[in-house]
Length: 160
Image (cartoon, rainbow, N blue to C red; front, side, top):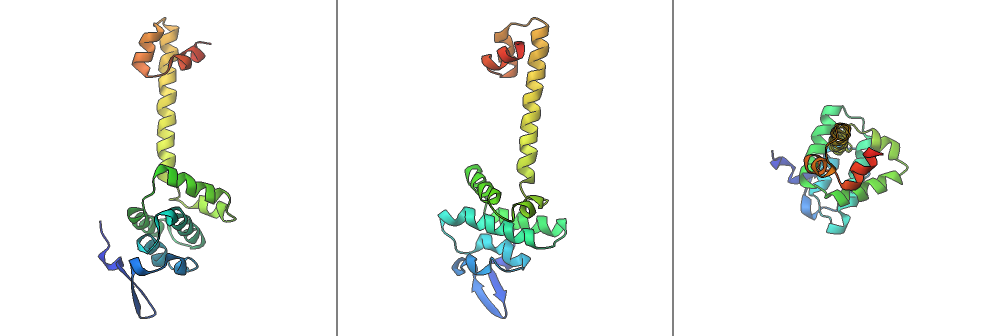
């Protein structure tokens, strides 16, 4: 899905090409479109995490319904998708921000990451339950490792 009408930004009858627009000029705005468009503005590779942090901070100050918030977040994330390491850097900034509580209340803030972590934890717990059951049935440890993918140490810990 593309948003061709977002390639230029119009404020007060002034049209600016986004890549030539300094994103810092818009972070105090209460405009949802300006927040979304931060992802298309001119920023350096080193500024990527700061842009995402400022976007989240802006979104936390706006009173938008969840549908609008997801639309804006989706647009932003499509054009400024961060690596896992960069997302961790953003989270560190959020943790040390006075706006932390509001940012963490965002319905879209790290929602998908939370789902993935929950799924991984569930799979890991399931593997351990299977391994414990196999141990109770007397299955050899090498076989349990092969079936579950758990390490020898993890299975020994379950055994205790």
